[in-house]
Image 1 (spheres, rainbow, N blue to C red):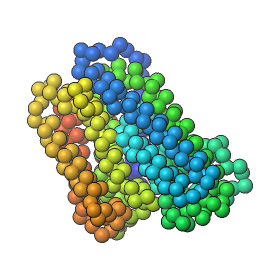
Image 2 (cartoon, helix red, strand yellow):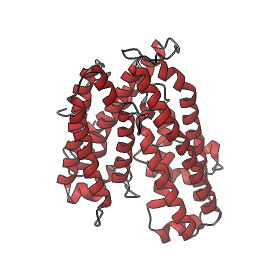
Image 3 (tube, rainbow, N blue to C red):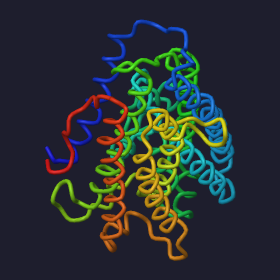
Image 4 (cartoon, helix red, strand yellow):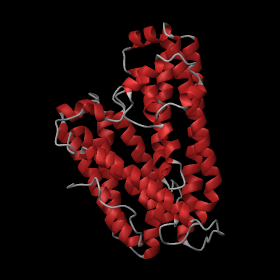
Amino acid sequence: MTKSLYLVSGVFALMAIMLLGGCNKNTGPSEPDFSDPRGRQLNSLVDNVIGPANDVLVSRSGELLTATQAFTSSADAENLTALKDAWRANIRQWKRSEIYSQLPFLNRGLVSKIHFWPVGVENLEENLLTDEEINLPYIDTRTINTIGLAAIEYLLFHEDEDATLLLFSGNESRRNYLLALTENHANKIAIFKSIWDNQSPDFTSRTELGFNGGQSQLLNSLIIDLRITHFHRLLSPLGELSGQPAMPDRVETPFADFSINCIQENFAGWTLAYAGGTGAEAYGFEDYLAELGNTTLAPRIQAAIADIDTHLEELTQASDFVALSDLVVNRPATVARLADEFRVLLVLVQVDLASALGVTITFDEGGGEGD
């Protein structure tokens, strides 16, 4: 098994441990203690970040479905462009929501059905050849690497515009598969929001220290997300985990050339979760550190965040924009620099912030540096 596969297995094993731990030790909701800054932080996260983001996520999935219905009814260039734009808007919002999809009460199977990569191209193409009716029940029984946002990306972007229009115009199975994919996606997003709506009161009441505390679970999710970006989204395509040459097909969105944008949106969601939102009502980890009298760590974390933000902005706004799949081959030092910037932030959060808060990290270093 390659190191990158160990990483993926380790990440999902961690999610299972967190989920089982949360289920076994759940003693039920308690009254929020708003005199405790942890309670203020958790409520700020839900009210200022998660709730509004979920509302947008539902809207974006509905817009994607509407655009798909228009395209599958009339597979022309205008409708294809609108559908691609709707897909980009949808994955942008999902990447911003990804950080809190990793909290232990979220069903990992559900999250994987929303977005799992890499897409299984051969399996997906086999699905298109079925004699069964291709509809929502059919899609709901497919493997996770043939559904979700990555599968939609493949269908829309893996060929140029003329070839894509030809494929859809002459193939009813392809149109039905795409439509059922987006219907399934909208359903899964609605379930995702419903779970959060139901679990938020319990989550915000978990002001205790320890594994079951909401702050502890949030910090662990922040760390998981940074590790996935550092190792899986950046080092794996570089070939650093396997000792192989660059592997551009391992970037997150290889067909749409949207991988850098995905990393940027994911990190925007990360910073919002860290800060507890924006504006005067926001209360996040920096505010909590101030309550503890720690005035030295927050500026270091902010400097690391600024380095990443600046670098991602340079990459996405460059007049000669280069996709991540090209960067890992032709400008690997640029990707390595970005990966190292994430490593710096990861160490600050996983070691320094966790220590300052007294939070126990609930996973080992499997899949990390030096393995």
